[in-house]
Length: 328
Image (cartoon, rainbow, N blue to C red; front, side, top):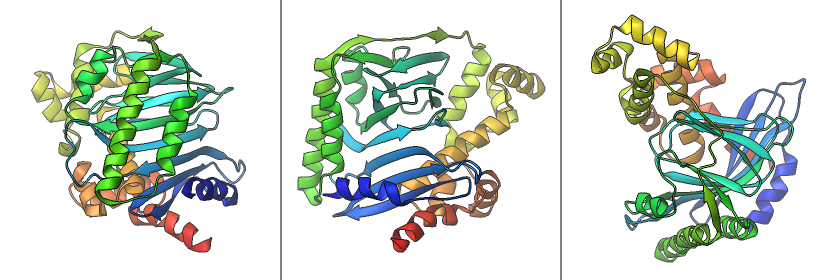
């Protein structure tokens, strides 16, 4: 089975530079991704073991559709974000602890709990330093998803929950990861998995909204965060943001840095580059398409910014996985 092959491959990788590599394995049209993140030469250890199944739907399931699913076992302090997703991503914590931040809310989570990443919002989550977490997730889209989640009590301001059992979620995700197929049969099978996941969530949900901290964010800063997330491809400048909020650019910049800890331009750049890295390793989009989707003027400016941040060009970042696959 593909899952057994993938799990076996985790034990074969050792790299010595600071980088994130992913191995893409293709099984009957499905893209399995192993993400392996390394520290420096002096600290050779995995930061994250993950399995991901990404599937592009061809028959237009608009009400509710399966986008991707996966499993991740992280090391201490492994983090994701700031980043923005296109669909809802529901995470189930299988073991360990971690924190999840969205908007002005922070959730301290542990085994038996979960959280939802809503589309179009900047999020950040990180594993605990002593008890790093492992989790499964499923990405779901469609016009009915907000209604389904709202009916379960999961909506803006209430993005965490507690479950009565976990094993069924783990089994369902790993069953999906191991699935082989193509065409309409494959899509209908994964649609069934998506609805089974939501059904399980409705049956096993014990409690929602486990907020541990709610900061009062300056309303102007909150608007900037929302604008940057919702207008990511446009790459709004400080001047444009200030004009939208009827504030002086210098005042807005100072306000944002005092609140967030980094400047607007730096935050926006991090947001765009994190999204670009995610697209490079989890999609088949071209570098040109990714540059456009993340708000860069062209491939040259995108490649320059990406190489400065990641230490290698977008193509080399993507090709690293295929080189590893050939060596095997």
